Structure formats: C-alpha cells, structure tokens
Length: 452
Image 1 (cartoon, rainbow, N blue to C red):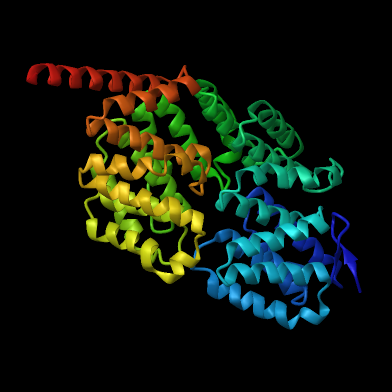
Image 2 (cartoon, rainbow, N blue to C red; image 1 turned 30 degrees about the vertical axis):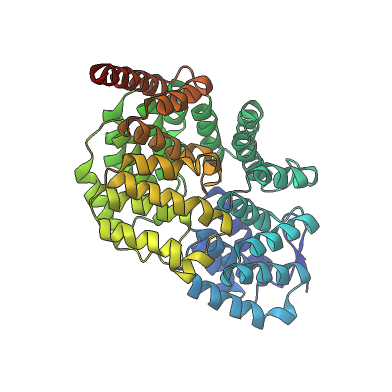
C-alpha cells in the first residue's frame, strides 16, 4: 500500500496514523520545537516499517554532526538496508545520502541530498539537511540558491512553506540582500508564528546593518517565542548579547552569559561554541573573564573532540588557550593537523582555513602577537568560509585587529578598523576600535620621535 505525505510525495507506508506522527516529527524538526526524536520514535512504535520515519531519524543524526552519533546513524542505516526492498526510490536515496555522511564524505552527502531536492522539490526533509550542509561547508551562495530552485513548487497551501521561506531568508541575509531577507523572514513568521529561525534571521540582518538598538527591541519583543525554543534559545541569547556589546553595555552581556550561556553538564557542543564566542568578544572589549574561561575550558575538556568540525575545534582551542590550558590547546591543533578522523570530517577548504587560524590563535594566547598577525592575515580573506555565519566569522577580524594593536602594527589596525566603520558607521564598537587604532598610531609616532 502506498500513501502520500502532506506535500503529495509517495511514501512506503500502510498506517495513516503512523504517517501522521511522522508529519508531526517533521514539523518539530523544522521548528526546533519539541522533541522530534521522541515523536519519530512514536511513529516507529506504531509502524516499525515506516521507511520515511527511519530516513528522518538518519537525517536528524546527520544534522547533529560530529562523531558522537555515528553508532546510532550506523544502526539506523542497517534498518534502512533491511527495509530496502519495501522502500521507494526517494527513500533509498535518503539512505544513500546519510550513508555518505557516515562514510565521512560530507560533500557527497550534500550532493545526494541536493539531488533529491532537484527531483523532489517538495521534500522538506532533504531540503533542510542540504541547507544545513551548505551552511557547514561554507557554500554561502547555495544557502540562497538551493531554496530559490524549489520555491516555485511551494506556496502557502503546502505544509512547511513558512519554514522554507525562513531558510530562504537566511540565505538572502548571508549573501547581503538584507531588505529582502527581512521581508521574507517576516512573511515566514506570519505563516509560522513559532518559527524562531525567522526571528534569528532578522537578528542577523540587524547585526549586519549595525542596528543594535533595533536588534535589542526586536529580540525582546519576540522573547516569548525564542526563549522556549530548544534549538534557538541559547544562540539567540548570544545575538542579544552581541547587540549589547556593540552599544558598550558589557555588563548586560555578562548577565546574559550567566543566565543563559554559561555551560552546564548537559550543554550541547553548539552551546559551548556560543559561550566561547561571547567570552571571546567580551575579552576583546577589555572585560576580565579569566574565571569564566577556566569554567568553560573544563566543560570543553570533557568532550572527545575527535572527528569534530574545524569551526568547533577553533572555539575549543580558544577556550583552552584563554584558560591557560596550553596542553589541551595543542591537542586540538594536532587533531586538525594529524588525526585521520578529524581531517576526514573536514573538507580541504576547512583545513586550509583552520590550521593557520588555530596557529594564529595559539600565538595570540602565548603573547606572540606579531606571529598571530602573520598567521591570521594569511586567512583573512577566507574568513567568510569559517563554517559559521558571517556574524560568527567576524571574530577572526576582531581578533586580528586586537593582535595588530598589541603587535604595535597600528597602521594595519587602522586600516582594518576603517573597513568596519565604513560597513557599520553607527556602531559604537567600531568607532572605539578606530579610536584605539588611531591612538596606537600616535603612540608609535611618539616612540619613533623619542628615539630619532
């Protein structure tokens, strides 16, 4: 018996109730609300042979990333292999895409999920995974273009359309089309009022445009939606803290860290990344966070980190270095240089950026600021491919400016700060950086005059 899902795609299913439970799980995955794993388990309890539910289970593990879920993914793929004769062609392709991820070939996994999207443009599950992998692998234009390819096949009458618009809005924002990004995100929210992803996009737009006060107002007005969202609560709190830092309200940013971002035993890896990124920015603003670095480094030390993304490893290394745990920082750098599982989990482009970057961060941590400038300058133009958003990758530029100032390379710092002011002239943070660079240049001139 062949049924069809809510978007009209055929599925290998015989139980309409189990299929309805799958739809609830898929909606939970799209919205990052509720427990999609628990919901898909309910669907499989009703019908253990519901192939598309196993595909969702595999996709969720791919979306989780890292090496930890590999055993669970392998088990899911064994089940899918056993159900192969009962699966349709699209479902078998889902299994093949997840298998490529398990095999350590992220680019092939993306190609396979992307090919499903081309042939089945209403496959929201494949679309979400392809969109996430485009992000991780630094395919910034495809964040926009992959969604644009399928939009003609969706409309407000198709379940999940609002979430597809949210993906498109993020792609527009990451490619600098801020006006359309904000408008598309607001339309997404009109259709799916619980879509914290769309709230997140608008925060990005306001960050990129230097609208810190607007950003604070926006996130406070939508707090009831995102603060209870398991997938976005911590990360959007990070965005809120960034707006406060930009307005020189670092005490408020620290309170947000304590209330929301400070790590605990159950913190997922992406929460540790956000916590690291916030402490890093606060430190660059002159705030003493040494005690918090030690606590955060302890939580990072409990993770294996083998097989992790370079983006994650760079944050772990920074936390270890800032806490004075140089042995652990060196271990992270060695994972990127020599560990087969870690190197296999990252593309050649990831490694080409990450290795000089972590060398620069290590130099910065030991006070060799000239070496930090040298290593980080080599990858400055690649920073947008860091495996995170443009807002996240901005830490590379901020750290380079600070290293240049400490290395008494004031002219470089002035040039880099001038770039930032040109992009966001109303940013108090950028004006402060520019003033520091100008003062550093004055100090250099005074030193040279004194020794002439």
